Length: 115
Image (cartoon, rainbow, N blue to C red; front, side, top):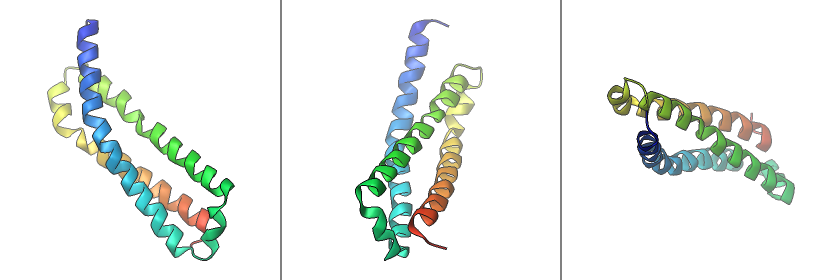
């Protein structure tokens, strides 16, 4: 495998995953916003600097976790299953989004005092 092939596969991975990162973040933001609203007035306590910094930290960690898809994607693209993978990698996105959504829901419930 030469460097050109790896570069092409990495470029393809970026082209696939980065536009989907926007949808990923919108969904997670919507979950946080819903639980913030459901937790009112208790959730207003998170509106201070420490609460905002904590939410920023969690958002960064969620985006770091999103990058795990690149490891799987590049590995699959460099295998003999590249064409099959390209047709079905949306499943990895769906599972990752579902997992992140569940984690976000539980974190939001705890942070905003929603039962």
